[in-house]
Image 1 (cartoon, rainbow, N blue to C red):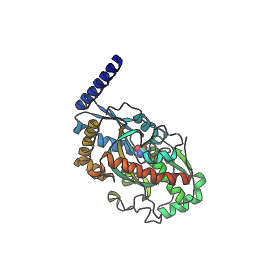
Image 2: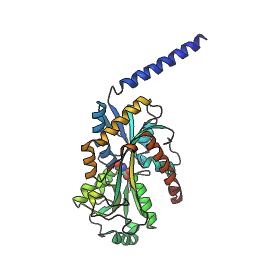
Image 3: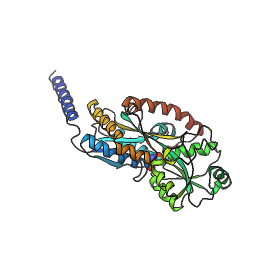
Image 4: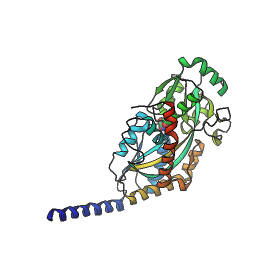
Length: 324
Ligand code: ASP
């Protein structure tokens, strides 16, 4: 009996101190895990977002690039982190493709997280090194089919958006090439610019500057409509790839069990960050679109994640691609 009272008492103390901690939140910097290399598209989005969220939370939001295995190592780190609001995850469409791709995923995207909200949608571009001979998509397809045994495709590992885009593209073209996996498309871009790899798909947040500087060749955008900041680049659909569409959506996640008042604070900071004129402006220049406010919510993110897992899993299973 005595033991039981002590147990109830300590549970009460714990609950009260968690409540007090939530009230004081945040009392120290917050770590935002970006599961890909620094200098790449997720990192760029994260750093832009962290600026506005830091302002709203009056505490610094620090980017931590925990990289590898197509983003799953960083996601797993946050799934296993203390649920106190001091570690969150910025991740993209890979959160929905990983369950189909990995046979032994060490976290469950639908059970192991709390959801803060969606962030922004980013289209991709199909690019090649500047010295690759084809000058447009039609020429690229013909060249690819003739030279596939010696061509290399760069991506950021199984589960990355660049992996998904390549998978869909190569299966639509009924061909295959050698893949080179990086810890992010930041380093993959360095090798594309240096001519060490032949082509890749990457988000406009990482490719716009290189396209504008003409330091790469570009064959199309992966969205259904053209991207306003790259308006002269046709979509892959326009060029004959029927129904081809990859738009990289992003969300913020916290470990399961993060208290509701803390999630509310994070959500408020997310909403204010994506409404900042400077955020909207830099996103527009990079071809990205911040989500409308009704998508920057926990429910909208979880519902979208679930729908995307249901959408991509059968496609991935059919393609027969997997990792352990
Ligand atoms: N978004 C990744 C990065 O930031 C790459 C990818 O998903 O393809 O490097």
